[in-house]
Picture 1 (spheres, one colour):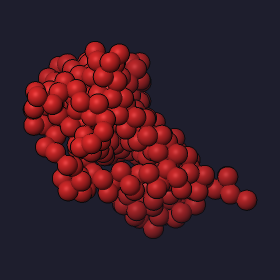
Picture 2: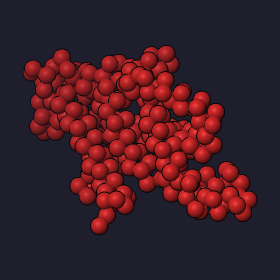
Picture 3: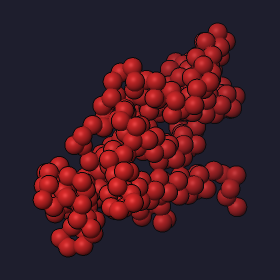
Picture 4: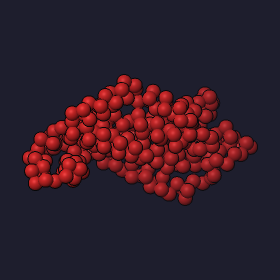
Length: 262
């Protein structure tokens, strides 16, 4: 419930971000550069005189959009591959799973790094790269769930009465394997935000002056000794968001897993 509360709060902040920010997050004001936290700059200002609080608030919207888009790409493609592979089996299963195995041979962040390097460093390519790198997780989970579900009596009954295979997959199997996928998607949102922040930190994600948390960390790292607030507050935002997503995912797992119910 704590995770859910934080996620709901972050969502509201993202929705109403333009109404919550006291200053323009990309306006440069050299005369007010590196002000320490206080009034009117709650989180201080960065090396360009931009309000860190306003940038962190706007970064909430960007980071949540990144998480949702990444999970959307990974889950749609991955679940589709897993459903087809698990249901049909045979040579289709062999080909699809070997492709997934090749993708799994690379660490997610390394695979995303390669893809975004090829596509070019910007926010759209960042989301595509991280989304592609997360496909194997959903594909293997969906396949494992389908292999179990396709042996159930309701699937056999649907086949006996002549239900088309596509309808069996979508209307009968998918609803019965969706629970673990929802949990994985929730946990994956936090992982996606963290991976996107890491790539932006390396300069392969969002580009200036976009107020993205990873980019803000990168820009503030050289000022940690004296102007600690420039990097600290976006770092705390990443930590709180990822922690909330993990707590929510754990809670959903406990709620949706029948083996954990008494």
